[in-house]
Length: 434
Picture 1 (spheres, rainbow, N blue to C red):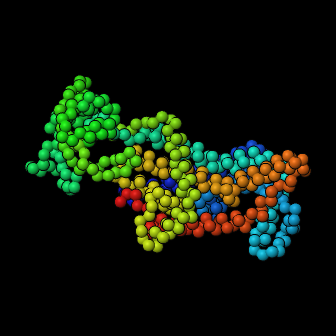
Picture 2 (cartoon, rainbow, N blue to C red):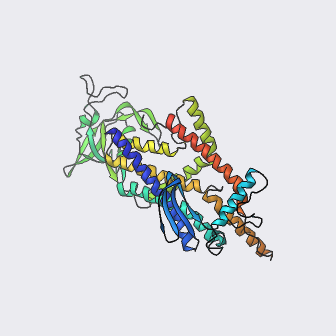
Picture 3 (cartoon, rainbow, N blue to C red):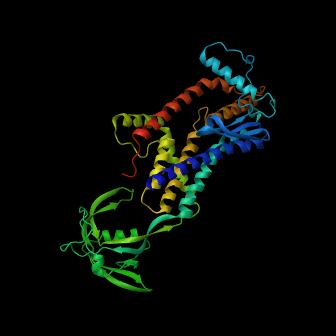
């Protein structure tokens, strides 16, 4: 059953990632068609085509390697004035040949439609919308997914309802699970507290959450407190004296430390509390800031991951992952011993985090990423605005094919970093569940 659950978790993540990629490309496709650009292909994946079908002028399909997707728009780059004839070979070596091949391939996209339906002929603002459409879809999808988790499923919250009362007070360091004859009764049991009681106030202070009650109890070891509870529709006042005990305490920063605090021996009932609808987008934006920090240090983070891979050190759980690592975590989440709703929420949250990563990563201002195309469009617009300001003739469109060598270097860097992360996720995976 555990193996089957692991496989189901991986499959669900793969399907979710494929949907995320499809929506990303749809974010490019819809505005491109709206603005009249001819779109020849809409493909999910790379490599050999597994299935495709043409609707109108666009071929839609799936390819063998599900690590991304693309749409093919006519005239992504303006034709270069020095372009040689089709099939000719450019002088100047490897990179010059790459530039020429890009120009030839670009010219082929314009053969049937000419320049009127070319991407580069769009106004700058329309080109920016087309290129930002993909990342925006990922961000919106993250909003929805986080919203499903916190507003649809809800956040597990310790309520003021008592779930269990410990019979005795066991030391924090013990491995025993049952009370011995010498173990003292817990203060909660001695006071008469029962499962199902609802905490109303502690020592005269009303409490609305279990952490509120815990904080008051932990701060009062050895002091007799009046604890008001609601039981069977009526309120009772119990006398409870917390004992001094060593327990794990969660600080304001979320860090868990061991300290000597007041202890009574009760646990809270946990319920799913649904957050307001705006909480999902807020969490997504918070995560976006965290991912920006990781992406900004990506080369360093990947280097550290490579060092951990070869030295066998434990990896940073907040470091970058490949698709393999994300799939592995999804499988482990699906296989853990927890309620189905908990596991479903964790996988949805993981998929939301991946969409945040896609959003941020694609905004990096380097070709062939979407952010690189946005920078080219803005540079083109800036040149035109400057020429208009100086009352000069409109300049020729920016020849982005000259940046093909830079694009090639970026692709190689991404392949190398991706390969390192995949190897690390296979041989030295991130450990989240012990």
